[in-house]
Figure 1: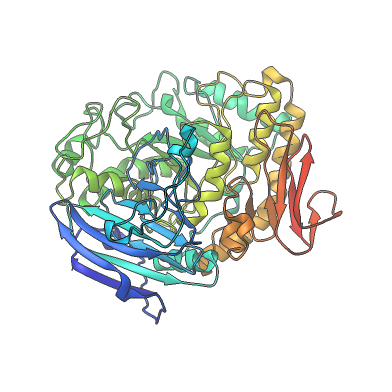
Figure 2: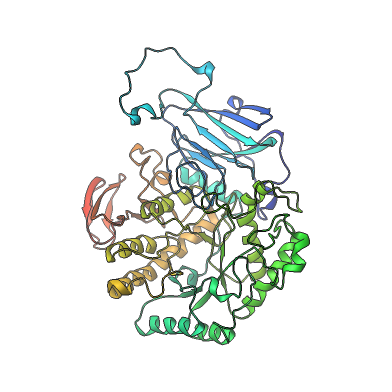
Length: 566
């Protein structure tokens, strides 16, 4: 790994806020002399070589895109990306290549990446004209032939630090990036148990009724999550219990803990004027309100300490998990968040703070927990986030996108759950739960479902068996997370991450390696089967232990195809 500085980088960058940042320089073979650097009124530009057969992955939680060869992506924070533009509620300016290197760009700006689809004029070679295109697919196809460039533009700044990391496989490279951030996160065994998030309008009696039902029917749920309705105000937040729905919330939490449940509460960071932390937070907040609430500047220790006061109260009552929502933004659902022109007391503008918001919010929560173990949820995470025990989720709900996210997240030092909410059929519900069981966090999010999602489909028995299977996987997950913390190797990752020398896996975005030992090939809702590819080696069916040949084959099943290294 080697750090290269170009020009004068900005001061407020992700590495500044990474408490366990661990850079150790070593020799690399990457041709640094081939990197071109320039500055213009638009900011900093870097041009790097791109080989003819080189494939590129990463840039955070990309639900619409996998292999970035010949693509343009912008690392822009956006909760609801509708196309493969690079928008994400967890963009990360780090990419990896099949040529044995990865590059981390240490910036909180909305960097643009062009991976070979455009060439400098000086690179054009005269050729005979190609045949006339007769379809729009031909007309707009990316033309990747020949050696090209990677072009990166970081807006506003007059320089940037980059970190070039080399390894034999993409997994090797990603592991080093995660160790640069301080290693992976500690995870308690209970955090890997299934979570059930209840309907937001439930009262405490209804919460306890559901909790008792799970016990009586032997439905293995380990964590009960409460959604916005637990508060008196939520958009923005009061962080105060609604005494109408929860007249004795401390007794409710106590009963849930006595039944063996852990308790997780939803919140977001926009503080309502009625909140007990509002007045003290205002001097340490940005100059734009969101939903009439202040936006605390978590880059400041004063803001973190003030905000964490309400969380410490909840933790003292028995809460040990939080869902940190809305710390991203969206241009597709009303443009509700603060603008890029916003100003924060730390010196960040809105663009930088959007990129850092989720990471700094996680830091604040961990300070409140003060060493208490958790595996919680967050809506936004960015660069150098591997050491935070928080899992990403999405309001978008396409099942194939969710499977792609499971494969993609491992490139970028982030964790992801393809959570289950509602379904249009029994088949869809079970397909979604199958892929959710084989992910880092098993989450059923019924926040807008007045009842259990499986009741109308009469499939409680099938749900019970899938959740029991989740418990069988927990020892394997714990071992994988131990490796994540100590070596930086992500517990779930795309096939190309481990099998980087196998061109057959370069575009497989719907299978993934799970805990080193397994290859999982979920079948998407609405489909009865799929093609599966297993790299060279000896494999067995995870469930039957029957031998399975490597290569490509077709599977038709109501269950989820999973294969284990023999």
